[in-house]
Amino acid sequence: MGLYINTNVTAMDALRNLGNISGTVAGDIQKLSSGLAINSAADNPSGLIISENLKAQINGLNQAVANSQDANNLIKTADGALSSVSGLLDTIRQLAVHAANTGVNDQVAVQADQQQITAAVGSIERIAENTQFGSKHLLDGTSGITASIVTPKDVAGINLGSQFNNLSTQSGTLSIQVNNVATRAVSIGNVTYATVNASLATAGGTLANNNGGTIVINGQSIKVSASDSVQTVLNDINNLSGSTGVSAQFSSGNGSGVIVLSQQTYGANFKISENESSNLIAGTTGTLVAGLNATVTVTAYALLNGAVTTTISTFTGGRSSTDSGLLVSDALGNSLLLTEGALTDATGSTVAVANVTSGSLQFQVGANSGQTVSASLGNIRTSQLGTTAVAGLNLSNIDVTTAAGASNAILVTDNAIQQVSQLRAGLGAFEAETLNPTIQYLGIGAENLSASQSQIADTNVAATVVDLTKSQIIEQAATSVLAQANSEPQNVLKLIP
Image (tube, rainbow, N blue to C red):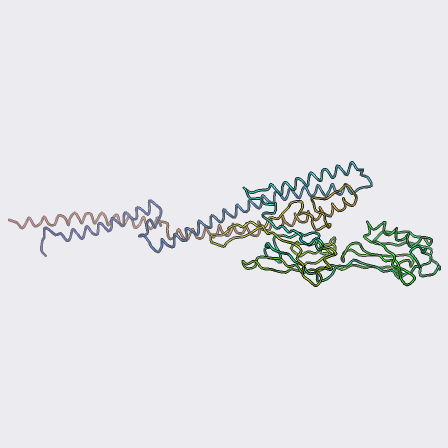
């Protein structure tokens, strides 16, 4: 092997290896000091791509958790306001019940009740107007569903929520078609009288053995005597109609007439139960007659697979034991109070009865585009509460200064309480079944993705320390070898004499 002075290949080889191992040592030190396995794109190009994608997804999930928690706080704010409204409605109902006790109350007392009710109604209106989360109004209708009636001759009241036919309610026209007409219970007597002024003793056209007796209508008893006229019986029945819901008329024809009993309220829940000790009206020992409930096909706009489309739902009258046959509703709590006009106008034909305005809040609850949920917070303005109890009445215009007004106020308030309770239940379900599980699974997802990203981007300290120790030993050896390689050309001097 030759000896050269200008070119020391051995030293060059040692220097190259020393440079390589020094780079490795520097890389290990950087990884340990930063805690990152990837400090530049050159460290792991493909791993960098995966790591950055995972990091973006993790950050998105963490933000989605924060979004969901903010949404939870917003829902809690709305529910707190609705809880206050529920308390005010309970107070209003209590005052209406007190005002209805007309046998005890004087005008001063009922005026005091009305004054307190007016104040409570005003408080509810302020809650509707002023409940906010930041600058976002929650309960004034801008974040809920508002329905305005366009044909009052067909519909006297409407209550529409955020769900229609299990879809999200959208803005548009609401139409109805009556499939089955509601009827009142009617009982046509069989016992004939010559005129309305005829005495009961002439029942059936004879004077035989009729000494009067007792007529019981829906639990209310009426004592009659043979000398009473038919008109007297009609008056006695009609005087009790506030308790029985039944009125009486005399229907004549062909030289004689009969007593006809009519239920004042439509539907199967409102019956005529009539018993008598003598054959004075029906000629039988007992009669039980019920009316029929309306069934209506309702068409509205809803969100289906991301597109707004029309959908239909069947509303049935008399769902609750206190509902009339004209108060039609679905299983979701949406309801319409039909008028008698609808039984003519909308039977066999479709009639547009309301315009629906949909306001809702959208929450981004996922890390990716389109991962959103929506909630409708309702409209609790007093003009929108209790709208389907009594035609023409709502919470904003109840008046307990009369016996009839106090009775109607109880019905309207009950209806308002039901609306607010359904709204609170819907918000509670949204919080418990949508937001809380979302927060939970997003947290789990962020945790698992963080673990995956850590495997790629974070330094394995134990393995790196082992590699650093090995590299430092090699570096020291390479330095020593380089020193020896640099001294080899000096051996040439021994050959020069």
